[in-house]
Image (cartoon, rainbow over all chains, first blue to last red; front, side):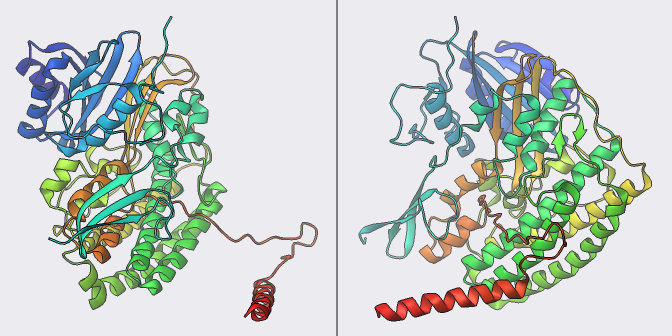
Length: 145
Length: 401
C-alpha cells in the first residue's frame, strides 16, 4: 500500500480527532491528533492494522510538550508518526503500556526527563536515574523567554 | 512455597562488561521475577547532540556502541538525508553497505564467542574471536580504524574504497565463509550446545510483537522483519540476498539466525565490491551546505536489529532534537518473558541471547622503528617478557606463602 493511501485511510477513520496530516516524500507520514484520541488510534494501528511500535520521541517547544509516537508498517516500510501536543502546564496523556509492553520504558524515560505524566502507567518509576536524581527536576525541559 | 532469594548480576560483574544491574528473584533455583536497572553510564548523548554540528554528531553517535559503531551514523545519515532530500551517489551507497555488512560479520562472530563463553564452552569463544580479528584488520585497511571507522557523513562517505584494496576484501570473504562453516558445524552438531540452548529462553511471536523486539531476536521467533529489505537504503536494494528467519524462538534459533546471516553478509559484500570494481574511483560525497528545517526519521539494520534516529532540524547547523533508539532498548526488555520460569543457570544465556551491547575493542599494538622499519618488539620477545614477568610474580608470591 502506498504511504498516502495509508495516511489518508487513518485520517478518514479518525476524522474528528485528526488535526493535520503531513506527508513527506517516500515512506514517511505524520498525523497530528488530539491527545485524548491516542489510545483509540494506537489500538487501531497495533491491533487492526498490524503496526509495530518503534519508539516515542518527546520534545519541548514553545507550543508545549510534543510527542511523536512512531509506528512501523513493516511489509511496506512505512513509518507513521502520531503527533500530539500537550500543554506546558502539568502535561499528561494516557499510557499505551497496558496495550503493548514496548512503550513501558520509553514512557518512564519521558516522565523522568520531561516530567510528562502517563496516566494509568503500570509502573511509572524512573528508568535512568533510579534514586540518584532530585524529584521534579527535568533535565530535557527548556526555558523559553 | 520457599523463601524468595534475590540474586544480583551487576552493576559490576565479571559476566557483564558494561555496568547494568539485573535483579533475579528466585524461588529455589527457578527465577520468578526479574528487574533491570541501568543508567550507570548515562551519557546524555541525545542532549549532547543538540550542541554539536551535523558533521560532529557523526563522531558522537559513532561512540554510542563500541561494537556496531557504524549503525548509528548509518541511521543518522538516513534521517538527515531525508530532511534535506539528498540522494547519495551509487558508489557511496555500495561503500556504506560494505561497511555495514563487515560490521555485522564481526559483531555476530563476537556474539557467537560470547555465547560460547556464557555456556562455559571457551573453545568456541577463542575460535570465534580469532576469526573476527582479520575482519577488524580489513576495517583498518579500508578506514584506518579497527572500530569507530569515521566513514559516514551527510551526502556520502569520507573515504573511498580504492579499487586496489578490493582483492584483499574478496580473499577475506572466501576465508571467512570457511571459518563460519566450521563454527556453524561446531554449534549445530554439538549435543551439549543443543542441550543448553534448545527450548531455553523461548520468546513467542506474540512476545516479540508485544515488546516490539527487533533484529535476530525477532527473526528467530518467526517475525520476518529486516529494515534492509522492508525500508531499503544504501545498496541493499541493488544486490541479491535473503532475510534469515527461524521459528523456535529459543537461544539455539537466535544462534542459527546469526550464523546464517554471516553468509548473507559475505554475499552482499562480494556483490558490492564487484560493483565498485566496475566503477571509477572517487565521487563518494556530495557537497552539502545547509540542512533545511524539517523532520527526519532514519533507520538502519544494525547487527542487533533496527536502529532508529529521529531528527528535528530548525535550519541551523545543529539538530534541534535528536532521539535515538538502539535495538537493545526493546530487546533487553524481553527478559521478562525469556527468563522467568527458567533456572538461574539458563537465565544468563537467555539474557545474553539478545546480544546486549558490550564494548570490547582492546588490542595489542605492534610498534615499528621509524628509521629501520623493524618491529621494536617481536612476538617471541613479548612472550619472553611475559614469561619473565610471570616468573617474578611466582617468586614474590613464594616468599609470602
